[in-house]
Image (cartoon, helix red, strand yellow):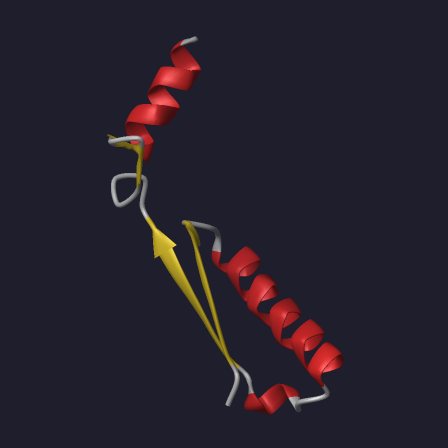
Length: 67
């Protein structure tokens, strides 16, 4: 059972589902393992669940928008 895990920011349902389907299709094509063997997980991270250089992603975005 191949397992694919993606950690990313929040995304619309349709985008997340399309991403998971494409990851499954391409992985099966490359490896020769049947698609129904793949498990795909998307961990969606909020902007306050991520830090860059000691600042939350929300803070980083606000600083960049202010420049």
